[in-house]
Image 1 (tube, rainbow, N blue to C red):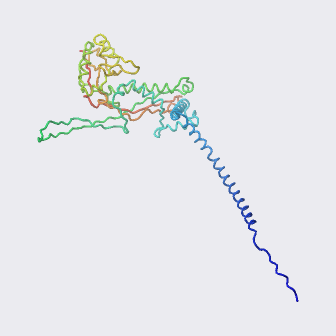
Image 2: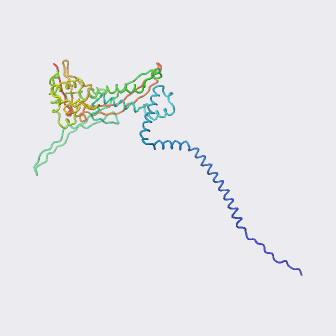
Length: 390
């Protein structure tokens, strides 16, 4: 009888630890590969964004400095001025990339005009110096070539009534006036060689000349302009105003200014100012020194006008002097000009470099223009001193 071999039991239990180790190794391998891929992407993105990050860091650092807003503005103005000056000297070819970008940012969409802050600042200062009416009149900016203003022709009236009596009916009557903006312009021709060789600051030179030209034109037009292609002057029609008379030799000039002061209604006189040229001021000052020094008071601060009867005296070069020949003059005006005269600004100073039309003769033309208007609005707010020589 054949004997059977005893049953041999084989342990088939899986090795769990080995399996876990194998899975862990595979997972680590995958993660290492994934980390490498992510780092590669991050490196590529960082390289691509590096210029932008550096630029933002510089901006943030500049803004973080004390007074950074003022410094940034000053730097921008200086860069724009430098760009414009370089453009004047050598045209577009003389600009580097930064200056070209700056000049383009300041270029208008219509006509390529460039306005530099320094030019505007200088011109406004000159305007106030030459045209004192601008400093005391009403000034507004408009968005079209003409503005319409309502004018009160007839005031409403009322009356006293009894408890049960009828109430009077009244309403004001209005009219309308228009003020048109007119254009000032000047062309300054300069040779290319002068632009290239000049040792002076042509930017300041040109801005000063433009300022003087425009200020003189404006000052004259605001006082005596006829309204044809230019503003209508305050004294275009002097007969529209109330007036007092003075002798042509100035012998009663103090009496005339006192009468003019009290001829103006108090509502206007309390806001009033005197307009006269320096020659007339000298006559009044000399008379006041002799008769009554309290009428005239010299200014104690630079830039502050003298006063006559407590109201400021403004130097108006376009005002008449006392007549020296046969005729009638209006040498003095006293009034509330904010009520009496309206100035409208349509377009500020615009400067354009024209290097084409004069190129055949080696000339560069600097063209400047602005648009402004003005007209009297309320004649009752001004009193004139009238003087006639027979």
